[in-house]
Image (cartoon, rainbow, N blue to C red; front, side):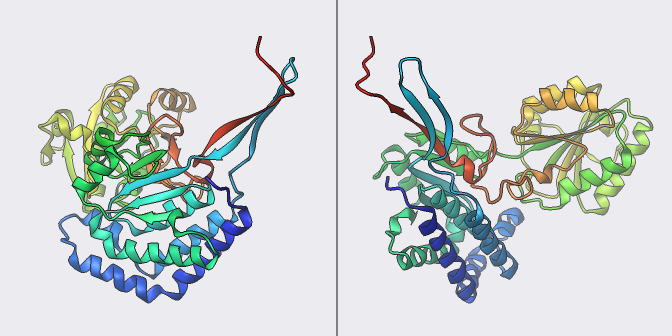
Length: 399
């Protein structure tokens, strides 16, 4: 794949920022078509679909942030000269072509494309049908920006395929694909894994857990739980499950206070059989599958555990491997918890809502990876490259 110099890439991004800003009404009109056609039975999906002036400002800002980041391609990782005289240099290199499959969010059409392009990758955008008009106009904007800088439009391409056509494309791509990133629910991820013929990097479900240790500061605990649960229910970093140590002082009183605070924020509470003994008016969890579920709603599950090791075991069994938190005043307990939890991000006395490229200093993100290869956590610009070895000899042969 041809390498584009950083100045030209940045010129494209500057053009795109101008085009979006000048064509706000066109984008808002396209988004209105999507919103009008959407059945509002899924509030989280609807929230993700909305484009307004504030969201457009965020899109422009995301492009600006990536534009200001250093080009990640052809950066030296290591250099060595062997005893036999061979010089070996390892440098970053583009993946090639990335395909992203996502639901609802038009802003992904901006963030995925800007990151892939700046990292010198082509990108195939397969958005959900619910955001068709929004995505269509945004890709047109991208093509206008590319043409304005004398580049081919195939750097950024929108795939208009139904489910059956997508399945066929994944099994037998009509063009080379080096990496697929499914960004959505469990069913989407499973569909891609079952049908893809190349590497898949999973942006997994949230289903994030928070463990309240027996020495937790209760004021901090309430503030963190409310923020993690209610700040943005459609976020994959939202909180779904709370595990409370049964040996926390004033256990019953604190459970009742937590219930009051959550209900005041209009959060629906379900509980395990142990918590039900104290919170008798709440609904009891009757199906183990609930512990695996990502809610994406104003809903939370509360359970009781005997100790931290039980909490760790339960989290590692049921969570999506995205974000997990502990509330404790002990740095030693926090360290034990964080080292033994198998999640992309682990927190001590902080909301899971910080698992986000912008919040973590990464900038715009393609997704939050819950895989372990080749990267885990926010996939920012620096994570959208692979590597290549450059070996320099002088007639060397291996003997």
